[in-house]
Amino acid sequence: MRIKYRLLFACLLLLALAFVGGGRKVSAVEAQYDALEKRDPFVPLIGRGGVLLHVFDPSGYQIEGIIYDQIDGSLALINGEFYREGEKVKEAVVKKIHTDRVIIAETNDEITLWLNPDTQNGGNSNAKKI
Image (cartoon, rainbow, N blue to C red; front, side, top):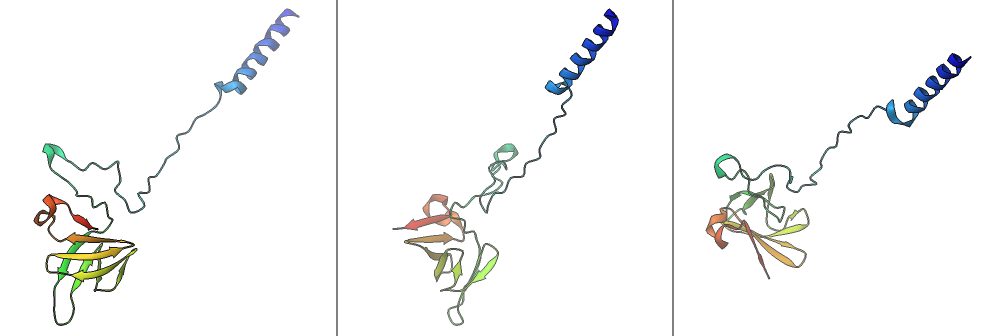
């Protein structure tokens, strides 16, 4: 009779431990980061030997090229798309295209996007004009 009670007690104890957490399986949840068109903070800006890998433009506008034509109208390559003066880029409007820079107007600010950031403002890729 004692053996039955001990066996029953041992089974109940094992069953209780299984429910309390001893038998739970924990699985890892994979998370994905969505940068929402902003710089991914998990990607380094500086590589081995202090080499700058990528220059981040905080305005969100990256000028990649300018086709300057006084007669037929100039084109600016911004964020992979061509724009003429007066056209809308995201929330801004292209005001003026120069040979070395593009001026865009965003709400109440004018932003100058320099084709070569080293030519103006000590290397800043854009300068806000107030």
